Image (cartoon, rainbow, N blue to C red):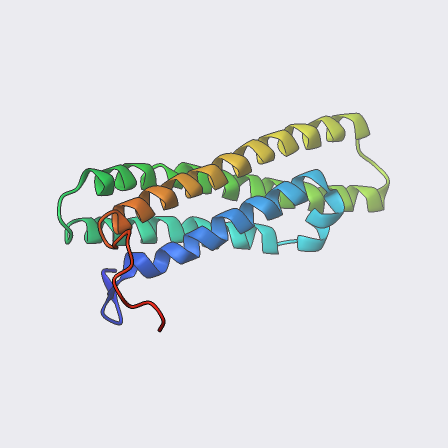
Length: 169
């Protein structure tokens, strides 16, 4: 995908990533730490994580197309390098979202049957919770760093630091 309605697809698709990755990260962290939230979210959590995951390579590919159509610039290269690192974070969010969803579904079924080893389940929930928090934080920080570098690449010479005389409009 290269253009959407005459605009570079990357500048439009990036908004999907900027919204869905942090939203997925927050939903994952809440679901991993609060089993009731995981049960209420149900399959919506892994579905959200799947859409977020799919948006990353689409946006990256569109960005690579755009990179070939702008002047060679160190800031653009830095943005591209950072952007290439988001896919593992998005994959981690997806895998953990599936795991949290599955664990919540399993715990719900076990509580109805009255079985299960509570201590082992608690240790597993703690481990998944800590890992989910770490991956969620890493993904959000990475999105921020990528977005910051992209903004700098796009805007570093694109405006005047002094007013252009259009004041009062």
